[in-house]
Length: 298
Image 1 (cartoon, helix red, strand yellow):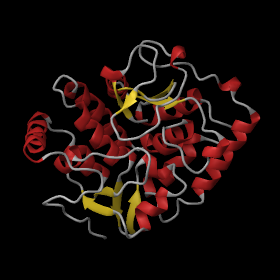
Image 2 (image 1 turned 135 degrees about the vertical axis):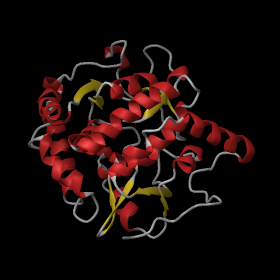
Image 3 (image 1 turned 90 degrees about the vertical axis):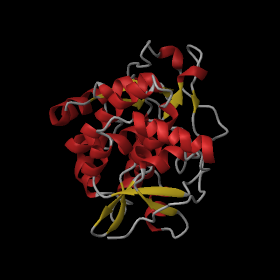
Image 4 (image 1 turned 60 degrees about the vertical axis):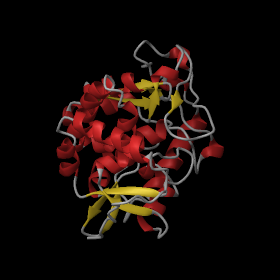
């Protein structure tokens, strides 16, 4: 799930995204309630869609060794058997017992305030439609497989689950400070495309990587991308693209460090970032910046 700008979203229309891209999001928003949630119509999934989900699951599982973080690999089994698209309600029951979170179905990208509110209440929105077969290798917008496979397993990990709720609560405050886009960038570079250091090297914990058949290996192994040490100020100044591999990744040392970084009041940080942007501009996707600190391999 990714953040969108509510101010640019007329009622009943697909929202617009903060990142740079050329395609509008898709999804049937007439099915959504005022909170953008809807029912998962599990019976409507075709046999072809169940088979596609199974193929996607098998493809990603074959890539996890040496690329995904250990916490994700440990938690993946909680999604249940991969022969059929999981019923969100059943996964929710297991998830609530583990960390107090539940899943809610949504028709696609949702406005930031609705998204933040759900996270603050330990509710994670999962897109209820699956990509088309021709999008097997790459899809721009988040679909059911991205949200469920990529995001949900780490919600079974207590520290990461607490971070996600803290992020949502902090973002609710940010919406009143004109800082939602800054929080969207933090989410993008951590929850969607974050790397974590391990004794065996960098590993992915971001859902955009864990659900990707090509960028997962690229992010961990390729020599081209910049991999920078975790730096919230730098991330909030940095733009990103939604329709290509990321040219820059940020590396955390642990989920505990990520949670601690999000505990303080962000208000002073927002002000510093806004001042930096006013004085020196935003940092374009892939651009180097003064003070960049390369992430070190363990």
